[in-house]
Image (cartoon, rainbow, N blue to C red; front, side, top):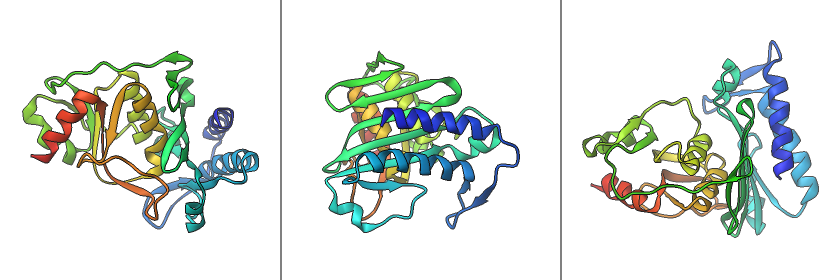
Length: 248
């Protein structure tokens, strides 16, 4: 999987330089490009060919209920941050995870423009370009650098959170930044798709943190609905403080 994600990232770099890259809006209003589809095709070819008995869930493949019959499931976002990809910016990545019995066991987030490869294996830790990741933690939210949408950050402002409402980083990179200690946490409200979460969630957990929905419930993947209700990610102590703040 790591090799396939790297290969997809390099293909993305080549396509990003292509002039006149076709793009259009999907039914939900989000943008997609021929680059998204090309990376999706590459990942599907590499991963499904290698493991034909695994299920498949990708942002760029129509969902099929047959995936739920599989114990193991690939969860793929060929390009997380399509707008940045279209505009030639650096804030896009390739993300892939393998879930087993509803939980991620292998994950990778690759940011090709900066040559940053985040990876994690359940029980074996998380790394950035091979260097182990370990998060700092605190029960205090004072001065904490928390990325999120404005609706999620609003109840945290009175607690001294240094909110970052910027939408530049897609969710997978926000989670990777939490795992790497570049952010102290990430919050979001509303439905969040499984392909935007699974790989990054494992990075945070394996770096010593915690991830859940906004009510504190843990994520289970490969359900009929391929989404989770909200996001709270941080070190374990700060995660508990964020959950308490969002509940009040």
